[in-house]
Amino acid sequence: MIPTDKQIYDLWDQYQFPPEKRIHVIFVEKVALFFARKINERQHIHINEELLHAAALTHDIDKNAKKLSGEHHPDSCVRILIEANMEEVARVVATHPLHTILNSSLCPKTWEEKFLFLADKMVKYEIITVDKRFDLWRAEEMSEDARIVLEECYPKVKQLEEEILTQINVLPADVAFLA
Image 1 (cartoon, rainbow, N blue to C red):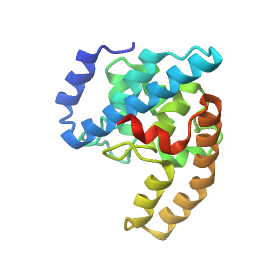
Image 2: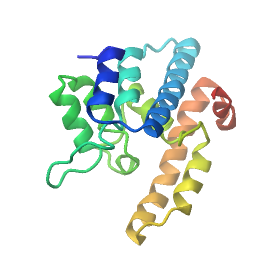
Image 3: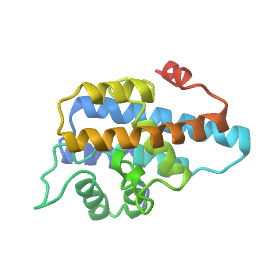
Image 4: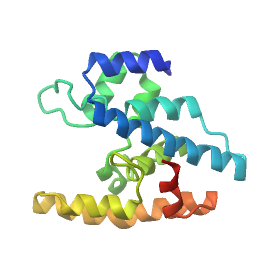
């Protein structure tokens, strides 16, 4: 099931989704739908905008949710969505974490998955570029292993950014003007 906005907002309340994360997902949704509409306009590729909208607004729903033993983000998010009978949304959400781009079986493959993934990497609490987002991550304290994964992801995220933005004829800096 693809949820209505009311069902999404009810999930936000049920899982005490923080205000700053609500801002994040709203901007992610804006960027992802921008990509979808642009690719449809330029190449007449049908994108399931309702699915993308729901996935964007729920992709971090587990921020304050109780995690099961051994569960991490986005596993807990996927579980919450499946429990809410939103399996189709859960499948898109499952591919959005940064590290998935390194694994051919987990990485985003559909347009909806790719748009969610890239939009998430172009938003903190405002719309920014992929380069700026990686600069913010690089400034964070993290383990050496996490830093290695971050740097391994960077060229693949840039490749996805180029794939999408070339097809819609938009420059990375121009996306930030959506805010």
